Length: 220
Picture: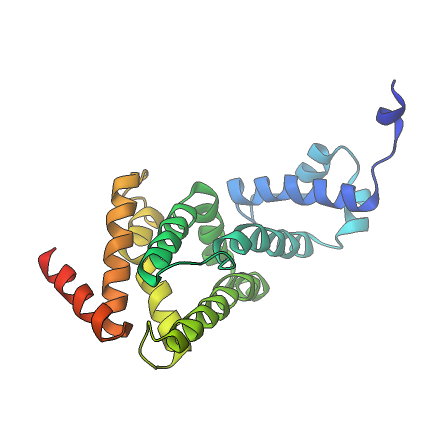
């Protein structure tokens, strides 16, 4: 046995391994059909060891939800590199948003949150805090700067951010969530990105952008 193999994993490493295994189990089987015994067996230890990290299955489930929300939503709402003219920037954001929003991982997480949040409001709150709320704050900040540059008309940035993100998901997210469609082509994503941004700029763009967007929408 090598020296490295003999090194005992740290508590943080052990916790991360538990969360990774629990994530796969909860997303695959749901809360009710996942047991601490199953997770302990996959981790490679006793239930007693598992309970040293998480006092109950509920605690493990909520921690898994927190971890998954951070993992998924942090890159989804990163607007730190949103540079360029507003149409190009927003179309790029919508394309990235849709690819992640319609991915297998995020659809599975979304379904889990909807299925379990009535029993465990903590997981719904966590998803909202790390996801929608964080995303709205980032978009509102970007829209504030765009209004100061004169690209967008002055308006309530919070409402503008809410309506923009609602437009981003739209019917494609519902179809994917309900199993109406399974695969989304890049061409479909591209068309949707242009439509979302045109609709948004028609409502919130300055006079020039709004006129151009309305003309584009009318031609589609």
